[in-house]
Image 1 (cartoon, rainbow, N blue to C red):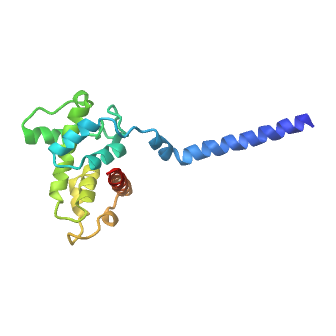
Image 2 (cartoon, rainbow, N blue to C red):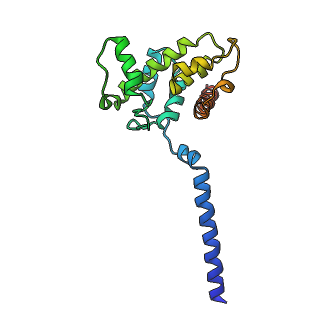
Image 3 (spheres, rainbow, N blue to C red):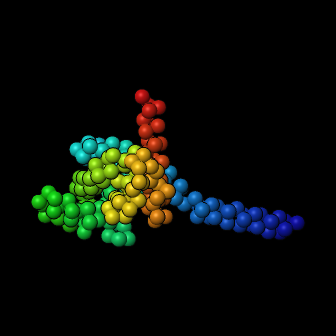
Length: 193
C-alpha cells in the first residue's frame, strides 16, 4: 500500500512539475516582465525625454519594450543599449545631423549617450508625424521598422487608424505593446495625483 502511495505521489508531482514548466513557457514574457525594474534610470530618462520634447512615460514604455531597462542589451540586428540604438542607423544619422563623430558600440552602452540618441531619433519621428491623430504610433513604427515603411503605413486621412495598416506583424505587436504600456503608465500617474 505504501509503495502504491509513493508511485501515485510521484505521478502527481510529475504532472504538477510539467504543468509549471508549460505555464512558465507559455507565460514567459509576462513572468519576465514582472521582475523588471522600470524605475531604473528615471532621472536620465526624464532629462533626455524633456530635452527632445518627449513624454518621459512614452520613452519609459519604449525602453521597457526594447531592453527591459538593461543598458547592456544587444539586439539581433546589432541594436545596442536601453533604447536599442542601431550604430549604423540612428547613431550614424544623429552624428551626421549634429556634425559629430559617430559613437561606437561601447559609447552606446552608456545610458546617457544611448538615451540622448534614442530620444533624439524618436522625437524626429514624433515631429514628422505630428499632424496625425496617431502620430505616436507612426513614430514608433518608424523607430522599429524604418521611415520608408512607416510612410507607407500612414493613413489617407490625418485622423485615420495606424495599427491596422502596419503590415509587419512584429512591428504591429511592438507598437501595440508600447502604446498599451504607455496608457497604463499614464493611468498610473493619474491615479497618483
